[in-house]
Image (cartoon, rainbow, N blue to C red):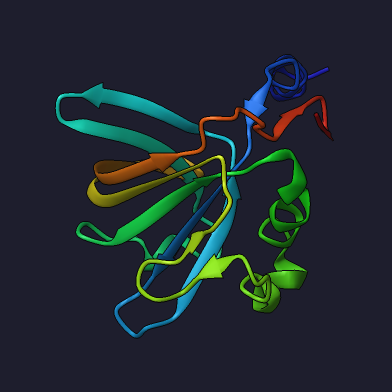
Length: 154
């Protein structure tokens, strides 16, 4: 097996929380994508990073100053993760009644909603690392987070 195959296999052993990154661009168009690479960076200032594949539809709408939300999904929101991870369902991502589209789109009933403004973009081969300054955060106290490991939801 190649280095990439071995690395992919090793990474499948990690348990990831499943989130959907959502935003609205300067033309008022909504975008969302399922992401697993979300990590806190700092508490002072509150910030996180998320990695976005450059081939993703949302990629070119993300610029410094763009507002977005990381929606940490609950176990009963697996369908939203699936909708936001497939190119074939890109036009249906906001059909779910749990989206609040009054400003920056966010999922009502999510485990957590973390609102951010893009502070920095770092290009790294196939992905862009997005560093977001947290502007608002809320979370459900009952932990019921959707996770993903070895190609399956948990």
